Image (cartoon, rainbow, N blue to C red):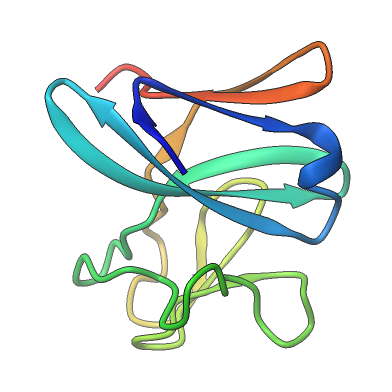
Length: 116
């Protein structure tokens, strides 16, 4: 977990069905985020529920529901699609997580601040 405008993770360190937490410095402020490998592709989001802004993980780096197929907010039980960040159920239904851009460079996932 580093704090810069970019976070890198070896592809092997984030296998399908796993998550990882990180910090970025974006526009002078710290952004706490997490990455999830869903069906072999990495997605990254700001770790903030759109309902009330709390972190999704009650325990560090625990973002998946019991089935391992959906992201869950530990505060209110909202469920999110790992590939889109869309809230599928719960008090934020219709909203979505703020996404961060992910690209692959060689054998690494690279996550940046994005446009905002």
